[in-house]
Image (cartoon, rainbow, N blue to C red):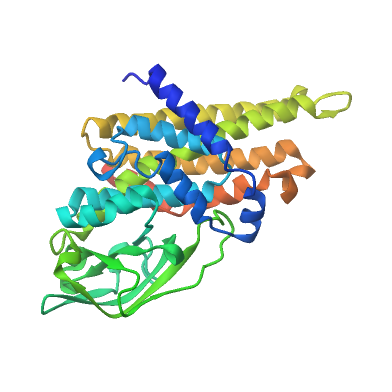
Length: 380
């Protein structure tokens, strides 16, 4: 495995970082108030972020997974807004990728170009009030009607839900078959019977809204089904492997920025007539932050290497999701400890990384679920 980067790739990452730094001006206000900026979403699209791994025929960048992850790493390093970055990642890996992989020519042409240009936002609707980790116990149903399906059910925890223009909705066409009856549907927001909830307030990632859907007697034509009946589990598992592999790449950049900030602070802050970096408790915490960063980066790059060669990455994606999410939390806690009292003050800007990191323990499969996946693949 060769994880060295070409000069062109490193130059592109630097270009992403410089672009990302231009987006920080009003972040503190938007984060405090939970304000989503569609303008920044479009700016990212204009730069090419949403299209990174998408084929050029749909307006994408046609980049391989390594190039895409490196760009997301740069975005997380340069831009403090991990909320919008998370929302973009959620759309790329759990909405765009399934449509690219399983969609018809018409579906790809209708939905991929406007998502890539930022004109349209897509939400992934799998979780329900009574089925989170146990995703396939869903109660949403899709009953066959003449020319299509009638969908009834509730979906929740939809990243970008309140601002999405359409949703990839999973419902069961044959409940008696359990997970093998789960089917994917593309449902436009303005379809009669679709009701979108207000924003669900949350502790972190506040700049990307989260919401719920109620679907009551929603008629969907057969042309809006994604893949064949019963293929929903395959589509969902495939998208989750992509998401678990890639959605935390920006956190690598954030952890690198966090590390550099802590090194500068430890050198500048003086107590007992010396920089606090001379105290072993502080320096050891910073060393731990460096070790977490480099280990997480190598795990992520291994997953990218496996997927770039078409190899199964189920276990490695679960390891990456588990390790990256938990290590970002640990480093965020250490950052607050290193800053002392200022670290818990909102005005310091140190606290938001911790609040943003906590969600990583839950979304795209909780840490407990990742451990279950790894244990099952180990034969336990």
